[in-house]
Length: 405
Ligand SMILES: [Zn+2]
Image 1 (tube, rainbow, N blue to C red):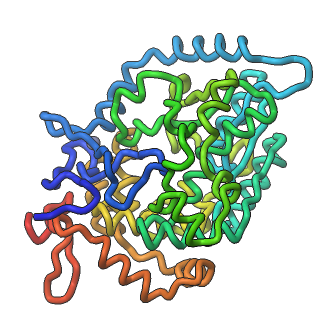
Image 2 (image 1 turned 90 degrees about the horizontal axis):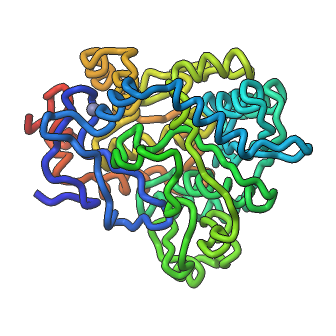
């Protein structure tokens, strides 16, 4: 049976969480081609346990007191008392960035600048959370307001070519911080969690530093955006090099002239999403979404962009993994729910169509909704989906209810 996107042919579920080996590891989006050339997927080990769960177990063995001491040593090295900023925290004012910026400033006495790559389509409560982060939390913040025309074009193309509505946001969010740090002469940048928490290769998590391949580029001409070579975007879509540079990373040459260190705060401090949520409610006025997020059961994860809900619907189409699978796997690893509960949540919510903002998104990118459905047909991999009586069904589910289970 053929597979799309270089995904593993056989679908295997982790015995501990509810994630499958079809979960793609994140690759730098500026190298993301339609066939996901070079892609890696979540490794399920011989004992049936995935790398993300193994990492979760390791977290329990880490000496966090020692790690915090390492953090303080690092902060002492970079701390400035001359009125300038000594670290940069990129974020949206969601629970994680709220937590990070707040502890750095008020617990560890740093002088952070915060910066924000805004969502493609803000939700009202997402915008309130951003405002409260800055106003109640008390931070200087730089918002990079993007060229809206370029964002629209690239968002539409990334849906058409990759069924990936969130690509422009991911790119901007990952690349903006090193650029702002370079401009403001800030040498220390903190991201939150390492991607390995969720299933990137486990070795990535053995260091506090983020790999440079994520935020530098060596050759502009070899970059891809929306699944197309940049040259094609310039030649065929009236985009200029400067339009594209906005969301591309710093050239390697420029980055290597700086002393910028990109760190994961999650390496030093124990990182539990639910606790970051309570912390943000308490300290920066964070509020959960007033209703359940479609496709899952949660209310406080990634709620500031209307396009995020559609993004997880597309992961369900492409990899058979919906938002409830992502959310409950993480909660199983943090021991908030059992695997059995996770299975029930997946059964109930995974793949629910996010109709709340759907029309608005289609209007925004000027795409006929029926065209979106046609694209979904095209991006269903035959090894994941089977059509029975005119209806698409998963071949394998964590509940063993697939057509081939
Ligand atoms: Zn697992």
